[in-house]
Figure 1 (cartoon, rainbow, N blue to C red):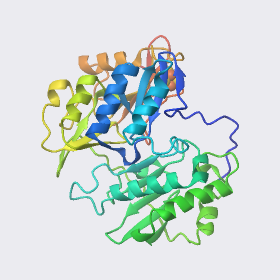
Figure 2 (figure 1 turned 30 degrees about the vertical axis):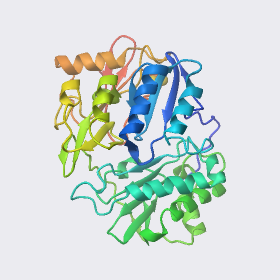
Figure 3 (figure 1 turned 60 degrees about the vertical axis):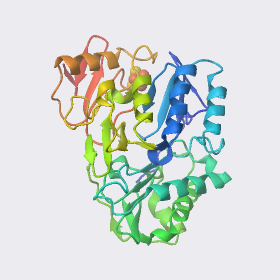
Figure 4 (figure 1 turned 90 degrees about the vertical axis):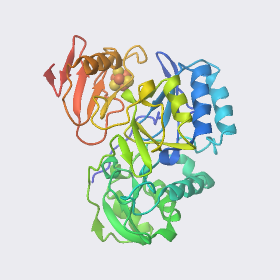
Length: 367
Ligand code: SF4
């Protein structure tokens, strides 16, 4: 791997580092492991109603965004998040990027419950002042063994082998270790990254970064982690129900229905939500609880009017196309973008629907 020279500034938004979009402030709330208690989800729902445009956007890293924040919104929002336990460290707020298999501990495919490890990793991260310097894009992932997160190319990834052992992987180079050394080993890998990097944001951008970091940890890679594409689709999975959220954007009514679904929800990196299998009242508000809907796997950037660069109102256009049958059946993952930056595009292969000012290109061909 050759080094990537970074000359641009890391502008990943957070709660305090709000991005100014055409429709107002955009705040991204990190949700380590995607796990929220329903009272915490209700705090976010209410904040969106009172400070923003009313919607909660789910991101491809299992986080939550609020848009359309008024000028005094960020301070009010951070106060609410702090009180709800969603902002444990102001210095670390943008670096708490931790994915965990959303169905971990809830179905038969789970080899190990990684959610407690995600919580411990979050605490360990926030306890180290130096790790506040991690770039906002640096990503940790804890896979419970099913292989659902490997496509997301985390910087420091761990996959469960069994109850005792896990595979620590940096850029696919893996070494077996006991669960007992996590999460300290994961934060040590992040600290080693800060030592070996120059301006780079990701381990893969540092020349021989994976090898250099393993060496500093006193480890030697013994295997290569396979990249799998095990996707979690809507429907019941053991004790859980996976709910597809159309275009990953929750209305007040939908967020309210999820708040009533149980004690906690888990936001997935596929912009769906995991609730208890017995949850009811979700289809009535436009959420999807069975597999194979037209909404499954379809994502869109903000588009007009939220983004000044957008050449089209991609969310309205995607909704029109999906509900009237045009461009339905593209299959797999489909991402609609208002311009060539393709914000929020999914990891791995996807059908690319791109606004070009006078219509759309689908994988480069006129639609
Ligand atoms: S892809 Fe382009 S139009 Fe869409 S949000 Fe990003 S910058 Fe805006």
